Length: 348
Image (cartoon, rainbow, N blue to C red):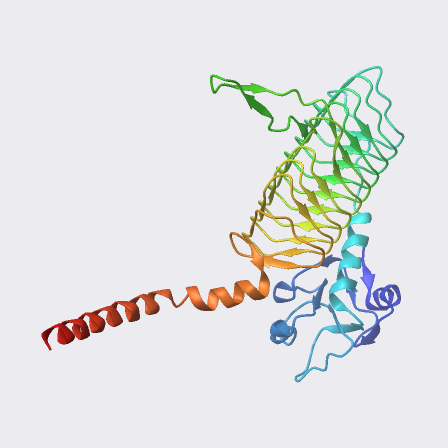
């Protein structure tokens, strides 16, 4: 399907500079643009590409003023990045949608599958499962006894959701993720041997959550591990048992949150952040990559380092410890001079 610059500008509320009849049929990065593709420019450091790109249409910020001729038709908008994201959503929405239940899927007779569902080959849906409308369950997904899915849930290949877990509306879980595996609970006895503590809770994921590939969210010992509305988790994240993650919090790859900790709403967790157990991270907290969190953090703070400390304090400390080799050398020199002075005083 082709889209003209005129149609795109109308959809985005943009202004056309160039040929309003220019047509595109696919999307491309500006540096890889070919005739018939649509690209965008928002970062000034990529401006030089717009003068050479072969893309037919380029979305740019309204404030952009070229310093050389541009062959492509430009559509000027308030925010090129967000407008291009809207077009990506439109592009995905117009792709052919999978429907129907594969004869190779195993669906328990007691399961209630909502209308408009897609269930791929070798998916297993156990006793008492209920799914909402328009769910997409790709091949080799496993849904344990009593799992509940809301409307418009997408589970990519190999997702495992253990028994009694509850998934809200408009949730996407990417390939290989495991929801509701046992929390890491073991109790030592007098011999130093560890005995498993049964994990009888579940995981509850609210609406509009997206979970990346190979992420694990453990079921609660009792009660629920809760991922609140709008949370976005990257690939390879570990959420421990009885953890609560607040609404609209985002976490990058390899974050680990230990059991019973609470992460507030609107937080931003960089890659490889580690949060110890039984802590509270307040609302709106920002944690820099590789931060090690060993104490609770109040609302609105920015922490970094390992062990983590407030950002300003970390930068002051960094100014010192990056100079430690020079400081060490100076101390050794001062010690030598002090020894010389002592020797002179003794001789006198």
